[in-house]
Image (cartoon, rainbow, N blue to C red):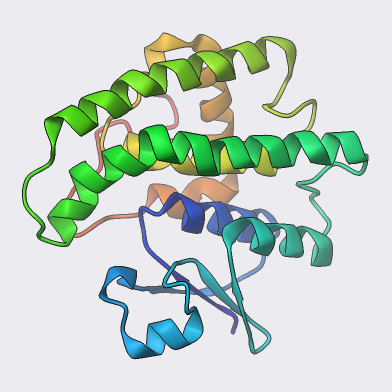
Length: 221
């Protein structure tokens, strides 16, 4: 069986898991404590990052590249539009969340509130957490603006942009750090994504020593 080396609350791993599940492609999930950088892990990916997908004997890295590969080999349901402009918009928004949102919001908050605890690196820096919580308001407002004009983030079809955004937000929702009352558009959009069969395994995730927020697995939240 194909295998995905991942970490439970990594948005990049969740993005790949959502894509695999949407395509109904089964994989064995193997948790990887990537920060320990074991020799075996570093042989799999010298960049020292997850996810790593072992597909038909080949090791594949980088979440965006993996997801686009999966969309090519299993085109139904399609997660990238057929027209070039549509693909551009999906890729632009994937980059927005994987780069800008992660740098300003999910990366700092998750590092302080989750990964420091897991790696036993001390207490969270409250200023960093507050900075991330302040920055998320801007991103939710931007999503609200997009969803005022579109059914999904990148257009009329659900796409990899939606899975990328949902992967990041779901990690923050696990620790109850998303104000869903800020935007009805964003809350309704997330409810649609959250209700998809592809999301079920994510909602069953449990990080040892850290229970999910009460609304995390609730479809009507």
